[in-house]
Image 1: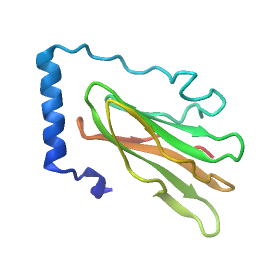
Image 2: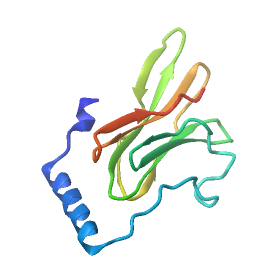
Image 3: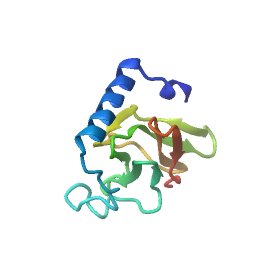
Length: 144
């Protein structure tokens, strides 16, 4: 996952400028989102207990009721720059270890979601995120 740790100098400079502007303008820091709003994610789609929080970045999973497909959602706040992906692990014959199956998404003071991905028999999915501001990383528990 070393490729995810690499970022351009322009992006780093942009984050530094945004952080400096926030400090000098005296913007109010936002509290961590405790839960998603009803309008953002329907309650039956959220998979409890699979969240991951690294600094001011949070990731979680949703499951589509119609077919069981899964998506990763992540949010950052207080000028924390984060990247997240959806990973899958498959057990049994033809199985494989945790592998990224979504695009890589960059977030800064916003929320984004992957598309929905297959999560069938003997397959689990999890959200992984990297917080470039703190250097921390983590993955949520797998949803089977």
